Image (cartoon, rainbow, N blue to C red):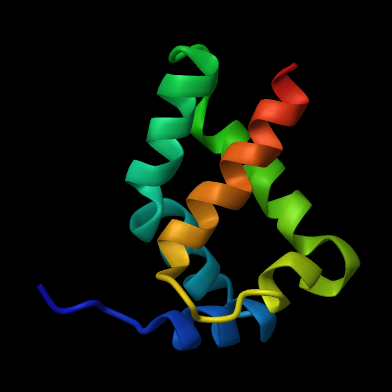
Length: 93
């Protein structure tokens, strides 16, 4: 399966303020990743849009510092799984 956008295109788009790219990333590309976090951390008791909003605000802090820190050593979705899982586990505790 061919990816719609490369990880670099996604990051560049988000950092450049492309709302369509942000929408694609959080609501299409990462749907299963965020859905898994909802299941594992929150036992299906949280709303998808609420988690996306929280994650978006977290990643946006300090001029997207976390996203800018991505080093392309793994897939962006793998990186997001780690960052988002840690974030949500910390705020859920």
